[in-house]
Image (tube, rainbow, N blue to C red; front, side, top):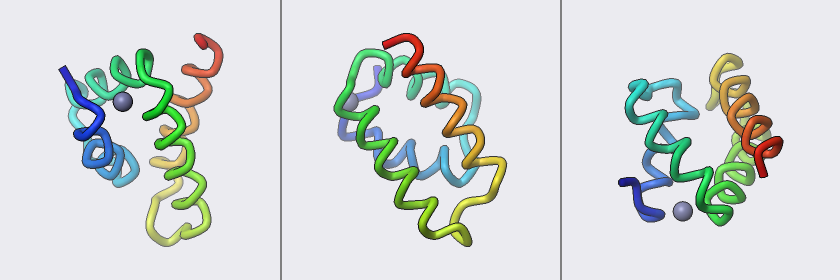
Length: 74
Ligand SMILES: [Zn+2]
């Protein structure tokens, strides 16, 4: 099971569009349980949004989709 200390690494991969389905599932499961990491990922996304050259559009959309889903389930 994914731990909080593993989330930053996975978040970077997520934003880079470089995650396997298994990694994405693990991250999503952790985010469902952990509001600290949800907030972390949201803030990271805002940060990356301020640096659009770092993240590709599709990656940004994917993060937003995940966060929207989490918000609906919260
Ligand atoms: Zn966590």
